[in-house]
Image (cartoon, rainbow, N blue to C red):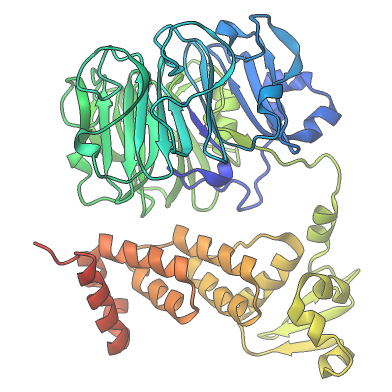
Length: 553
């Protein structure tokens, strides 16, 4: 996947890398060692790209865009072809909030902004900039042909072709088409964005990704479509014939895919149950199957490992990476010249570090969001003092266990406590407050959230925390609980989670759990949880599932 979608808004993948408090360290990329501490402190997003990972783009907290590096094919967008070791500002993009960025092999660059605009620059030998000519793009230009009144939310680049996904679920492609990677039914190059139709017509796409000369789209019902070059089986359709129009991966029938990424000539797909499938080229062991045989159809890998929550690959490398539910990061494929044929456990805390340290070239597989820990911020100091007897002035006793806190922090962070510590409440006079309504893990996690803004709980406990967040009117906490529950949903617990979502009036979560139950209807209806709910809810579920066509033959 050349697509570098912002961590916090990736539509074809889960990745909320800041979700569990993971720190992304940009200094692992040698290029960024050129920036001084003051410059690094301004970086909010960054992407290292290029055939030798010698170009970089970064966006500051003030939404200013800077570039530096070799400037191959004028891919820095500075208006010239000169390399620069000092970051240069792209004034044309000042104030634009970047939500997705991708790069090709020329390289050419595609960039989407939060208002739906699409910009392109760099190599244009095959009209991959979508402006109708083949002149190199020295500076960012707005891509508008055939995209009037369309808002682009994600971009993906192959070697020399381009794709854009719009807010209304349409996929557009343009540029090099020697293998059918534009999906137009021919092999003629495409000078302007063209809507990809065929079997994608009427489908609502939610993600796009490109191999070197192949294209993939993920649809909202979990189906995957591929087109273009298929010489190594990278389309996963059971043969190695190129496809000039989108072709559904029927081998994934019955699975609901939620993230798909492409390497140079292989693909990885993650299901909504955290299962991982791989297909395509395997010369370097990038499929993780334990051998180097290509696979023309998806094969499940890492079945003996815990649930996978994120996969990573990039069209300019043969490297694969995955992150598990507990935060373990695995890598396989081409890793610093070695062929690693089985997923190898690393000490990294995120998949980005795999590409920084082991990919060739050491490019970023997505647009990264930065956090800094070069000094103790207010947030970090608070995090450190949670449950600290030395500085605490109040204790909560839950299930016989104590949690040490600071009244002032609780009053600042939570309306419930602000009211509680007014003098008319008896709790205001107490040094120890007994809590009977919630369990220790749930109440501790709630208090810890007030100090850290993060939650670390298994999905089943997150339901209790969702209950607390609802009764205390803590909306952000409510949203975090819903994210945890979504990531932890399984066939076994889906109906329990759906019941909880209805009980606590969590509409987004209810819709998510309902869709999951419908997608896995046969298995869900065979679980104990399904038959233990009250009759009224069961009737409502069956009626609603029927209305959305779950029982059609």
